[in-house]
Picture 1 (cartoon, rainbow, N blue to C red):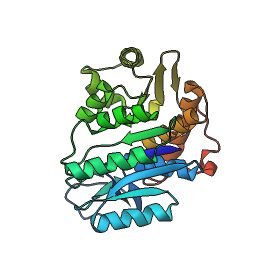
Picture 2: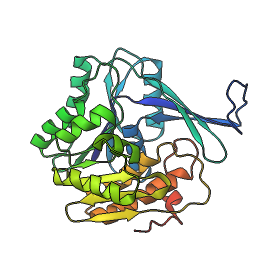
Picture 3: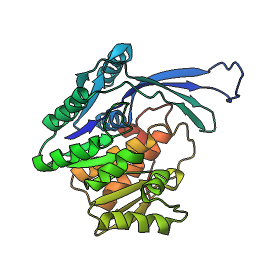
Picture 4: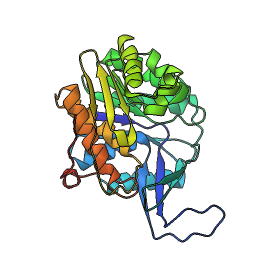
Length: 303
């Protein structure tokens, strides 16, 4: 089973318009609403592919109740940790050419007690040898080393941890040596403190992180696919699609496919190809929809 922790989940509303013009009244052609947050999206993608998962989320306020209802409707098993504040409502504005504009709220304040509760719930749910995916930004009040604390405790229990975050929370997590990190290109540049203009530069940066003790570094590269570096493998995979609709959650679906492949015993390279296939399929869907097995048909990753 793959357990996901999303400390700062959201309800995601996608608004589809013809063109975004600042300062104008714009009428939407359609809208949709989904449970959101990076770890939530990972669990949604896994559930859509009939993979065993559990999403650990703090819930509070009207949006928290709505998040739980949306997860139930999507058939995603979840463990709710009740908090005092209301979780986020995020808005994505989608244009016909695939351009996505996101408006993300900061999220509720989490005190020490709430942070301890979500970490404890995650550890109690995870299986020895299984994966924990710790994903997304941290809400106000959460310590910057929350993911690092989780890594240390999970390692003592025999669970593996993947981290998909950015900025200081990612840097703190890296110091604790998680089993896998999945930054995008910009997040990796921020992590290593320099620009990485070529694929070779990305490989060098990822290789240095692996040499420091991280087992797998997977870097999502948008339309250029994804790169994976481990102690024994270096692989680049990409998949071409002709009708992109939304990039929201595509990286999360990529991580879900990658972790499912690793959890199923695939090599890191084959797991990367599976992840890129899931991520590419997500781009063909509206809003933050996640792909089903039907959506994967006709999408092939080239390694």
